[in-house]
Length: 205
Ligand SMILES: [Mg+2]
Ligand SMILES: [Zn+2]
Image 1 (cartoon, rainbow, N blue to C red):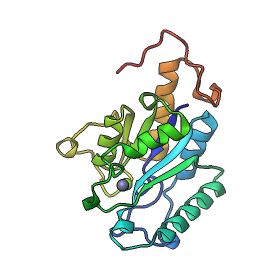
Image 2: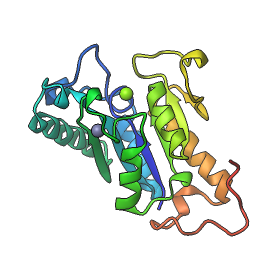
Image 3: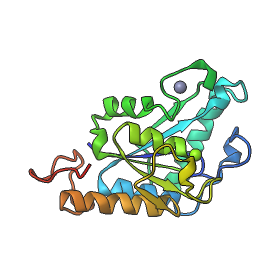
């Protein structure tokens, strides 16, 4: 099974100056639902991995985060899209957990739950810490410029992304095209178990 990992704020919904603490704060970005629908149609898993330290910092209760994610799924469903999994790190930075990006804990959890080969997955995020997380786990990475960061500044990137894209729709299109190049078949033609990669085609990494 393959997955495309999606950061939430700045990728699917608008990143504000403050935290998203209520469902009404959640403003979807243009083409976000279309991007997730592309993943769905390609037979890949769509997995959100999001740092939500507002919970650990006492800024919002976990019930608020659940309500926000229910709204996110509702908004996506209106656009004909669905998520396979949402993983959140709710810890404050000082708690020293293993799931807060840039650590790859959430990707490893998703790999166990969905039986993923992380080397065949892609992570899409809007921050250097997202790219570092994906690269550490062996995923391909795409930086989107739809968050607060409007340019890719190499000096701020501990790891460079494999692609820089204007938004999540462009990034998903890039990831699926890369998949098609690597495995020689249209992503849309692949079985849901992702098992049709022909032998003898090596990952170029
Ligand atoms: Mg973000
Ligand atoms: Zn955590």
